[in-house]
Amino acid sequence: MRDLTRATLLPACVFAMLLATAGPVRAQQVAAPQRPEVAAAADRLDDKIVAWRRDIHAHPELGNRETRTAALVADHLRKLGLEDVRTGIATTGVTAVLRGGKPGPKIALRADMDALPVTEQTGLPFASKVTTTFRGETTGVMHACGHDAHVSTLMGVAEALAAMKAHLPGEVLFIFQPAEEGPPDGEEGGAEEMLAQGIFKDFKPEAVFGLHVFSTLNAGQLGYRSGPAMAASDRFNIVVTGRQTHGSRPWGGVDPIVAAADIIGTAQTVVSRRQNISRLPVVVSFGAIKGGIRYNIIPDSVELVGTIRTFDEGMRQAVFADLKNVAEKVAEAHGATAVAQVPDTKGNPVTVNDPQLTARMVPSLERVAGKDNVVAMDLTMGAEDFSFFAREVPGFYFFVGATPKGKDPMKAPSNHSPEFFLDESALDLGFRAMLQVALDYLHGAPGGS
Image 1 (cartoon, rainbow, N blue to C red):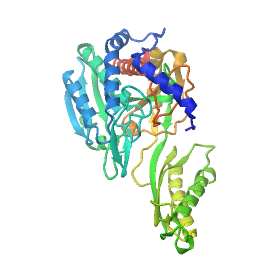
Image 2: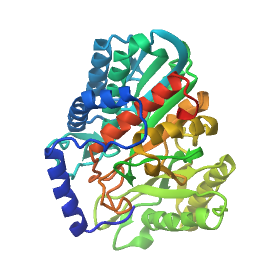
Image 3: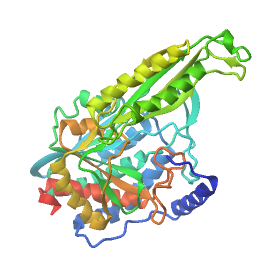
Image 4: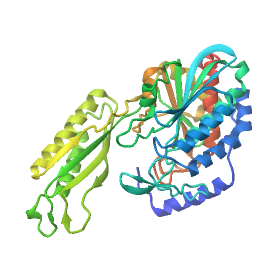
C-alpha cells in the first residue's frame, strides 16, 4: 500500500463527512436492461440498506464475536418469514432458506460479518468508537474492509427476494459468515468451519455467489475475474531466541533483534530469487515485530508474524520450506535459534471463479452497471475464505467499486486502512448486482439474457 501524506488525507476526510451527512447516493440509472423488479426493489430498500450499514459500521465486532450483528441479521430473516433460520453456526454464523413458490435451482448467497482490529480515522459521524484487546494490545475496531456493506446488502437482497416468493423459482440459502478475516488464535471459524458444521449437507446449492466492496475500483464499477481470482493466504510465526543482556554490553548476550532483522531482509530473497514470479506472483510480508520493553535492554526473544500469498500449490509449499530454512539458518549464524511455524494455522486456498458460471453471470453485472463499467481484473493478492464455498460448488465472486468517482482509486486509502472510505452508492449498485445475478440464475436466463 502506498504511503499517503497528511495533505492527501485531509481532503478525503472532509469529503467523507460531507458525503456521509448528505445521505445516500444512488447508482446512476444506465441503459442496460436490468430487471424491472431489481430497479423497483432498489428504490424501495435503498434507505434501509444505508441505515443498516451505518448502524453495523458504528458497532463493529471482531471474528467469532459478531453477536450483535448476528442477532440483527437473524431477527430480520425471521421477520421476513424465511425458513430454517439457524444461529450459532461456527460460533456466530447465521443461515436461512427462502423456498420460492415455483420449482427451480438452488443457490447460496454469502456475506461476511466481521470487522478488523483497526482504529478508525475517517471522521464519519457514524465512525466506530469501539475498542478491544487484540493480541494483548488495546486497539480500535473498525469495518475497514467493508463487511458492514456486505451484510446490509445481503439483508436487502433477502427482503427483496422474500417479497417475490410466490413467483420465485427455486430456493436460496442465505449465509452470514463470521471470521472471514480469521478466527481468534486457538479458535476455529469462518467458511471452512461453517461447512464442517454441515451448512451444505441438507441444502446443497448448484452455485454460490458473493461480493466485496473494493477501494481499487471507483463507485459505479463492478469487477470480476474468471478462474483463479484471489490468492491463497497463509500465516507464519517465527520466534527468534537469543540471550538477554544490557544494551551497553551486546557481547554479553545474543541479540535476537539483529538476528530478526537479518531474517526479515534475507526472507525477501525467498520471492525475488527462489520463485519464478514471471509465471505467477508470490508475496511474503511481515506484519508485526514484537520484542523487548526497554531502550537499554537487549531482550531474550523477538516474535515475527506475517502472511504468504500464492496461486500455485507447488510454489506455496516451496515458500513454506524456504522461509523456514531462512529463519532457522540465519538465526543460527547469529548464535540464536528460531522456531519457525510456516504456516502456523490452516490457510485459505485460492479463490477460483468457475469459468462457465462466470461467463454466464457477467452479462448480469453488465445489465445493472453498463458494459463499460464492468471490468475484468488482474489477479488479486488479497485472499478470501469464500474459496472454501467455491471448492464445494461452482462459485462467482465479484467486486463493487468503493472509491468516489473522480478520485484515483490507486491513491485512495485501501481496504484495511483506518481511513478506508465507502462511497455509499456502492450499496445500491452492489444490491442491484447481487439481486440481478440471483434472479437471472434462478430464472435460468442463459448468459444473463
